[in-house]
Length: 563
Image (tube, rainbow, N blue to C red):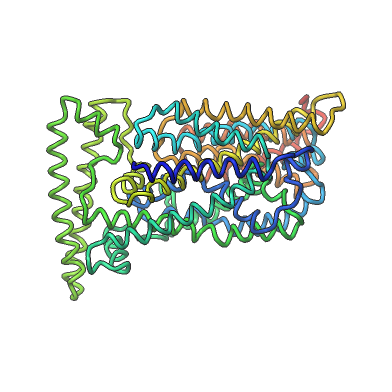
């Protein structure tokens, strides 16, 4: 990184932090601090909702996901528009009517305190872990880029977020997210057009898509019913709808974004705006990854994109074996480049199909070579992470983008991390302050006391998120890890809310017992890996509703002793 990159990076981050502190100074009451004074317009809500979900993981992992597996991941979001419509019709009017500060307040009025508490507890567990991951993701990258200590970076990123989140609460999160989204979109669009300009002469955007298609990267839709396949149309529509319903309808980190709306209409328009824009945005980010893939069909790509893995193998007794694999990869890539040129030039369908089959065969050889490299790296250093999906995009940024733009793209990654983490800390603190602390203390306290308490809980959750980040490690893919953590809890929570909304004869004790049993079942099913994680949302929701009804119908409420 050059001086100009440091200036762009630090200037951008300091602007966000100082702007958030200045713009939201002086929150004196809970209404201002937790609900932002109910002043947010629909576009602020829409961008805030989008920024909360689009963490640094989105901009690090998603291009790498496309590079390795293609465009199929976009199916994960197919349930989002359906969920947005349901939430606009059912959830938002009810929350505004009751004037709640958190989603879980409603559950006490419908059931009782223990049901409210356990549901809030489920949220705190999964979102607390998620907040740590959103700090950890960009810290890994900067650690690899700058050579800084990973723990130090986790602490720095966490502190930056804590400063303005503690200072201004919900309003600070919302106003800074507009600037963060502007930075994010600017950086991603510039990068996309630069990648296309870097392709060889004659390789247009259309031809680039053709090249990606020849390698199977453009297979967007999968209509199979194969449960072993994580991303299909049905998984996205059914499992995705349940996940998005629970995330946007019952997760306080999202509910708090639209509870700050000026009116029901503003909140609804904000969510619909998110529903319309989210899939195209994810499609575009995946497309950036596809263009990176095409770029590396004409330019040398490393055997493993994780620089720590390369260093580990080069300093081991397996270095010569690794060099042989590197030469093998170079030969495969050279052959593939020639074959791709032939594929583009062929006009007869038979010859074009033969060239396409050759490309597919070379892709398989490349995959085997990369897998063999991972095995060598593991033998050289079992601790080093061999899964390099999350390093693909950052490798391209650091090695190919011009000065200044590198700093901007790193600012994009950190801005996304800060916006998502700030929302999560804000929601964790609000839930702790309102659902646990305020509800369970006996004495009367002033508004100022609860604002102070909310700030204190924000600080505590910020510190805990930093600790989680310091002990985290790469999973199969960071964006999948966040969604897996959510899917373990979201279905159960959504089922509790659906029982509250629609099945009026079910009482509190039955729901409470059903929720405990369901959570145990979902964790066991996930541990045994019996189904793709998206289906855990459907399972959790269905099981808790079924069990609660059975308990209510066949066991009188008075016989279920729960205190």
